[in-house]
Image 1: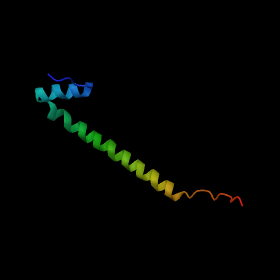
Image 2 (image 1 turned 120 degrees about the horizontal axis):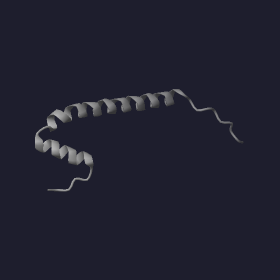
Image 3 (image 1 turned 180 degrees about the vertical axis):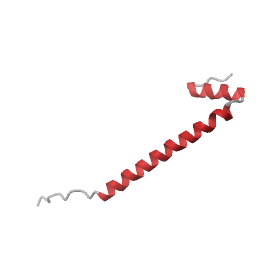
Image 4 (image 1 turned 90 degrees about the vertical axis):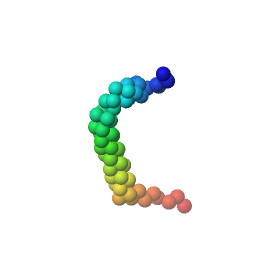
Amino acid sequence: MERFFTRGQRMSALLAESGALEDFIVPTVTMAEKIADAMLARREANAASKRRRSPRPRHKVS
């Protein structure tokens, strides 16, 4: 048996062997997708607000 590095990999291997992986993976994937969507939306909103705020005009040193 090969060595699994993380607890998650060992867990998923056991689930795959027992055939319970299908029941387990679907909600996990949808949850991961929701989190990824939320992160992406937040990043886009952040970038948009940065674009709106124009930097303060600096006084030119002549």
